[in-house]
Structure formats: C-alpha cells, structure tokens
Image (cartoon, rainbow, N blue to C red; front, side, top):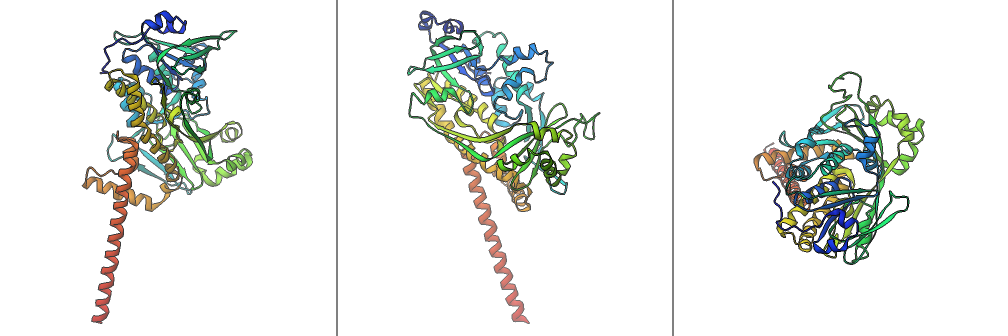
Length: 497
C-alpha cells in the first residue's frame, strides 16, 4: 500500500489551468508533470496515489482518443504510435526488477506482465547459424520481460484516465499543450495548441516534474534558472529497426513464433550486431546496430541483402519483408544525456531521459525511469511532503547511480556485439556463477546486479569491479603457482634422469 502525506496541498487542476489566482493562492497548486511518455505517466500515478492533484501535459495528441477514433482494437498500435515513435524509438522494452518494483508499489506489475514475453537469456547466433542460450540469472525468477512501449504507455494512461478512488488526487490530462516558458518562481507559461488561436495560460504548480525526454523543454527552461551543465553525446553507431513476422499456424515454437521466443536473440559480429525481442503476437522486433557509414550503404537493397546473406543468414530466412524495410525504415541516432543539476527553484525536477538518457544496450532506460518515479515518491514520503527537501534528496541519491548507468550502457554494447561470442567471456561468467553458489553474497555477474537487484547502479559497478579484479588476481596467482610447480617437477625429473 502507498503511504500518503496527510496534508491536502493542492487546488483543483481546472482552476489553475483557468488562471484563477484567488483559488490558486488559497492552497498550493497541483503538480505539473510535463511529458506523457512512460516516465511521466508513472510519475503522475504515484503523485495521484499520494493524494496530489496532477496536471499531465504533452504537446502531442491524446493517444487514447486517437486510437478510439481510428477504431483500434485492444493491443493495436493506433494513436499510441504518436508516443512510441516520437523519436523513432523501439516499440520493445526489457522490463526487469527495478521497473517491476515501481509497478508493484502501485499494484500494476501483474497487469503489465500479462502482456509481456519472458526472456530467460541471450540466444547467441554464430555466423555458421549455431545457437547457444546464455541464461541471464541463476534462478528461474531472474528473467527479463519483453514489453511493448505502446501497450504499456496506453495501460498507464488508461489508469490515469480512470476516476480517482477515495484518497487519490485528480488528474487532468492536457494534450496539445506546449510549455512556452518558466519563471524564477517555477510558474509555467503554457500554450493550448489545439485551438485555432493558441490560448496561453499561466500555471503556478507546487512541483514541476520534467519527464519530456532527451530533448526536454523543461530542462531548457531549467537552464535559465540555474547554472545547468549539459552534455548530449552521440555515439558513432546508429540503429535500424526491422521485423520478424509471425509464421502461419502455431509454428515450431508455438503461438506463431518463427524462432525460440523466450530469449533476447543476438547476432554478435564485433563491429555491428543484430538483436530481436519477442512480441506477444508471435512477431519479433529486430534492430541492427552499426556505424552510420554501414547503415547508409544498406540503403542500397542489393548491398543490404548481400550483407544480411553473409552475416545474418539464419535471421534473413525468417525476414520476408527485409528488402522493403531496408529501404523504408528510418535510421535512429543513439546518444547519452548528462546534466547537472536536475532541479532548481525548490520545485522543478527532471526524471527519466530528460535527466539521464542512456544508450539502450543494458535495457535499463525504462527501468531507470520507473526507478526515478519510485525514488521520488519515497523522497516525498520521507520529507513529509516538503518538496524542496524531497527533490534535493532524490537528486543526491539518483545522480551518481544514473551517471554510472550511462557508462555501463556504453560498455555493454561492446559486450553484446563482441564479448558474448568469446569463449573466455563465457568461461569467466561461469566462474563467477560458481563462486556465487559457494559464496551467496558474490554477484554471479554484473548483469545480475544491474537487472535483478535494487542495488544502486554505481554500487553494483564498484562491487563487480572488485569481484572481477579479485577473480583475475586469483587466476593469475593460480596460474603462476601451477607454472612454478610444473617447473619444479620438470627439474626433479631431469635430475632423476
């Protein structure tokens, strides 16, 4: 159950949106959450559960109304594509322990998992077409869950749209609304772009949560209030999204899956890689990660098909739409966003990609954003609703963790595209797993600590770095001892001879 602060802090959202200063001054204004993606919707749900009235704003169309207008059946993409594809982002996400902890606190985890496909490990595809499953964890519970960005976003929005129960705050969802400016006191100037002549309103929220992605407008405005440092760093590789459609009938693996469904499939080729995540409908969402020079060459279908035939022959066999997708599907950039600080004016705070966007190679972007929502809720609880204290505490705890995640995510790209194909890498992981069985506190892998624990990312990295160094030193000492022993035995054998 969610513990709530007792004080009623907020006026009605409608009154503040209407610009009624009398009522807004009689009580503190609602919380304003900017951005209706995954981070923003979950943050709004947490705040509502605390009894806070919330205004959720997004520049895009209301995806629920757009889906209804299109006559979309449940589970279809429809208007949700406006959110899911806003930045050409993958519709597939890997939900793990950190994200599930946040969802469980709101009682939402089971409903989300009902639309997920369990992935028990990495299925490595060699150039010759052989496969090997590398399990993620040491128990049956240590799995990743492939979920659709669109479905989970729609689910969270539907929960927000439901009438509040006793004790919950009210939520007003304002789509087609643009943040125009932010004052030093944290008040917002907002434009309703749905009108023929855009109407401008001033909001005086008690808390502003910026959850509007890696190109955050809230962050831009925050920089005017404080000395905010920003690094938006692109890597030299981009991505191209592809697909493996369901096969007619149930297929070899059941439910129409063309390949084994309960794994994240990886075709590691050192300088580039292909991955595929399963969907509930039997399809897979594939993604090719490669240098921009290679992605540009693949625009030529003749070259692209020859490239796939050489490097991904077994994948190509189940990708009938490959030629068309190589021509038509957009390429996406990959970047890390770091900024400092994430908050200002005692009432403005950034979460999710607005604060710490990472490349997708650890599958932790959504999980870290959901963990932000949980951490912010905990900070508000511990501060008894004192917003400035809560957001300062939240930032102090999350900043080092998310900085570490940025580095971990970049490093895991090398692991996925190259090390997973190395026998030495597999042997070392097996040794860590063996030590874990003998010493339960020993983490079986860095991936386990990141994906299946609540240990802050920077602590997980430091702990595993120590473990890895200890293991490497032990192996070197053992190797030296073995070499010395062999030399002594050989010397004795020569003397005896």
